[in-house]
Image (cartoon, rainbow, N blue to C red; front, side, top):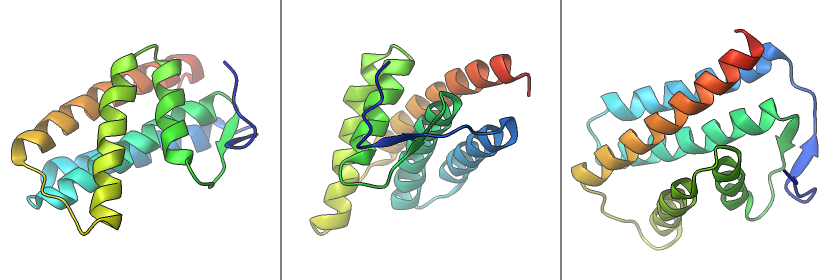
Length: 138
């Protein structure tokens, strides 16, 4: 695994910090599941995906730098670390939708899409949680 220095800095996180990152991701997914507004569901699901990546990246001794393109790199590394190309495909679709919502006057997201995204991110977070908890014994 090669972490690009442009996007990631070496950093030794404590077990507690890694666990806090994971809990933060799970919290965002929980908000997405409970809220009724589709835009809120989508946005919190997307941030839960990013935070799942940040958790796994911190687990691997790296800190994400806030630089242009870092969301794309988080998704790319998450897919690589979990050996799942589907993360790149659906994760980047979510990233593209989020960018359109932010920069192109908004988007419409359906209830069906939200459910698909929530299920997708929930499965990723389950994998991240199992991996992190088994190795850190949290």
